[in-house]
Image 1 (cartoon, rainbow, N blue to C red):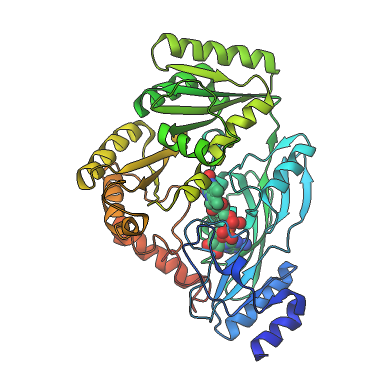
Image 2: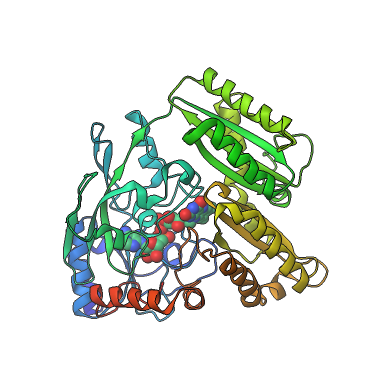
Amino acid sequence: MSDLQSRLTQIVGAANVITDDFAPYANDWRKKYFGKPLLVVKPGTPEEVAAVVKLCAETKTPIVPQAGNTGLVGGGVPDESGHEVIVSVARMDKVLEVDTINNTMTVEAGCILQTIQEKAAEHGRLFPLSLAAEGSCRIGGNISTNAGGVQVLRYGNTRELVMGLQVVLPSGELWDGLRGLRKDNTGYDLKHLFIGAEGTLGIITAAVIKLFPAPRATQTAFIALESPQKSLELLSHMKGALGDRLTAFELISDFGLSLVTKHFKNLKAPLPQTSPWFVLTDVSDSRDAAALAEEVEVALGEALEKGIIFDCAIAKNETEGKRMWELRENMTESQVHEGRNIKHDVSIPISKMAEFITAADAQLEKAYPGVRPISFGHVGDGNLHYNIAHPLDRFTEESWMKEWEHINLIVHDCVATFNGSISAEHGIGQLKREEIKRYKSPLELRVMRQIKAAIDPQNIMNPGKVI
Ligand SMILES: Cc1cc2nc3c(=O)[nH]c(=O)nc-3n(C[C@H](O)[C@H](O)[C@H](O)COP(=O)(O)OP(=O)(O)OC[C@H]3O[C@@H](n4cnc5c(N)ncnc54)[C@H](O)[C@@H]3O)c2cc1C
């Protein structure tokens, strides 16, 4: 046993230092990155995290913070050097406090997102962060990636949902910023540095998060329409009719939907006829269900009359609504079953979404005739998952992946012409670390490096990620 291993064992106990069977920690969800850690350490308290980091700082051992390991950009997996220690917060999975007057919950960083949602519901509250990985991702990871999900339209990204943080800095010092304050103008708001930092500035050990009154009714509808442009017209129409009760608004292409129904035989398309595009939407309210259903029906009826939509199916009850959402939630996984494609997670001003899709589709088709874009995502937030499957006649999955850099260049340059972002919600991690140099200004990159150097002068906290 090395000296480092024996000292880590003294801090967290032998059962919590993993020395083999690294696969669940070292490989990412998409099976793109296969890292080789030195060890995996699983502290049980913030003090143990602090002691582990202090020891790593003393021995200049690089650390990779990890929560649920569902990240999609390789941020939570180590490199192949065999020198990096994964610090997993998975054992720190408790809800510490629910305050229904302050409307906050204090949670440890390893709390599974779904557990938090369920705890909030037990208290008649809503924690609105919701994404397909919610059964296995953990709040420390959600905060570190500033996760988005399907309710950003109404409640904002994770950044908007975090009120306080407790963080172990790369020196091993424990910063206790666990405040549940809605107003606090006392200088730089440090928590925002750690939100979305992808573990490069410290290890989040706990958080105070924001709760909302649980809606009494949610109405789900699955809508057929002609084009992304029509989806923007529908978004505007629905916002006008229903205001901020419009909670989710997701665009799905026909090709994307067909992959879900192909690979999940138990799931059926809610509408009988095909359509080039669909929208899945949720409207939620504190009023009773019947009143809400009527308003949604009227709004969609008007959209039909105005020629914005072809058809729609309104869920008759919660179970039917959930079945509709299963189609959306299984889009990412259905693509894994179909085979590898080249993925993008881009952000465009909402008003330019349709123009972007037309322009990017045309540029790709010119370069690779027969290319098959799978477009879907949070169009209400201007966030599109724009995944590109290979033309069937001239490429195999393997030969297509060799085009990765060229396809990225076409798509991301197109994003840049719309003043968009090449990572809307998944982050930079390892995947886009080199690419951001092309799209962020030298000044932005310099300030980011200065912040990193100030907080982590030894560069031991998730080195090689983000910058
Ligand atoms: C099927 C599927 C659907 C998804 N849908 C969405 C979606 O709609 N929206 C979205 O935003 N994302 C989505 N994701 C991506 C992923 O679930 C999110 O990025 C999630 O927030 C990651 O949480 P995690 O606990 O798995 O973090 P991990 O993967 O463990 O880590 C992610 C990053 O955070 C760092 N980190 C982890 N814990 C800590 C900590 N305690 N302190 C400091 N740094 C830490 C890691 O080093 C890494 O850089 C999806 C993923 C899958 C597999």
